[in-house]
Image 1 (cartoon, one colour):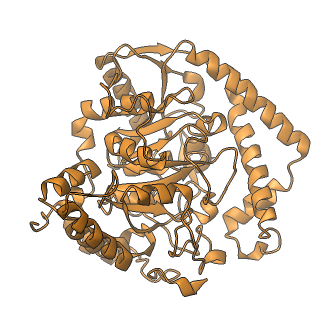
Image 2 (spheres, rainbow, N blue to C red; image 1 turned 30 degrees about the vertical axis):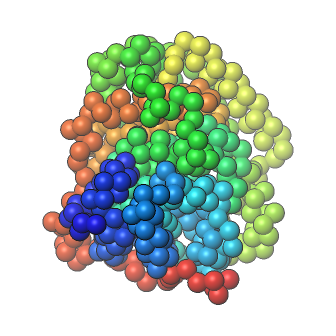
Image 3 (cartoon, rainbow, N blue to C red; image 1 turned 45 degrees about the vertical axis):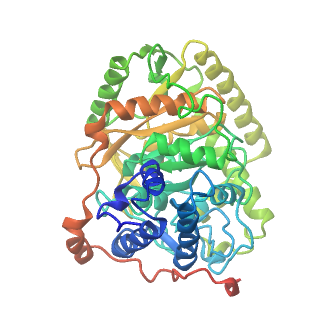
Length: 495
């Protein structure tokens, strides 16, 4: 097979598979180039917690031989993939973002990881996450923090921050994430990649450390919507779902009723975000979508209900695991504070939150009787500097969580499929994301809309961070993460 092209790490999963089939690239060349790029960029960015380089190379050699015999195994045969360090991975250290599990090496893969590997994808490493995935910045003082590739002094978003950083930096073409209150979509928006949260229960969460089980989702992250479909299909068990855009003509946005819902804009948008969102609405119209403005009664209960349900379920998870309060001192200050707050919630509070959740479910179902999809921003402002927790926004100091999660939690409360795609850039040059949301089980319709928008905005989608020009300066100015809690190869003897 030929030598790898210099820009091999910029190729999408679809492009890699075509190159393998034509024998213009081999999985060995691609995995070697991937690991070389990780070695060069990751000390600055902190996307990975653990690498499994030796096993990845062995799998790439076996995959190359299968291609030479013209019998590749699986729809993702030879494509490098990264997995959030919340998913169990057989014989690879899996920490869940906590030093309490710093030597944990599971014996088996989580269900979604197993399916992706069965499809032939090659796991190159586990990506950084907020402690126990309970945070939207991916700032993790004990285990290392991932940084935004566009502005490394800024947060990547969380809690699937490492996966988004790895994609935006061209370290991998595909990554797995999880989403409880926006944890796929927030870092995808801030890093400028595609993040998809499927319908609740579509993708198994077996082997995924739970944050709040009734809110948790596993989903694909990629550089394009088409690649997200490819990975979703593998995570879904390998069969192309009905309505798969790859198997049928894409309906895109033509003739679709796209709802814009001012009630969901709980925090006013910054001027640059508003401009990008307005431009996205114009693009939707130009693509044949029928934009309608619709109300959503009761939306003021959304964030309080989410917060209470999440806290109660997280406390139950950590209590049943024997971690809290027995090992309270070992938590980071932010997660410990949230667990302490959860102890104040009563059963009456939880029941009231679930009642409000069901009222919102009914109101949203009524909205979807008049619209096919809902279009919203992902955040009201830009990612904040690493270490900050509050931001001055619209003349007032607010919690960063309020700036962001008021736009992302409805989909988790109701289990709705939603896809984030880049819609522009803020005043700092950092991507701005929007999200298309659909009714339950309209996953492919949502992805089709995202693909149509993506294809129509190539000028926005074609920009990526430039590491080659600025890496030396970054390495002078930014702390590295090479020594955090190790970053060992897989080691069965570690636990």
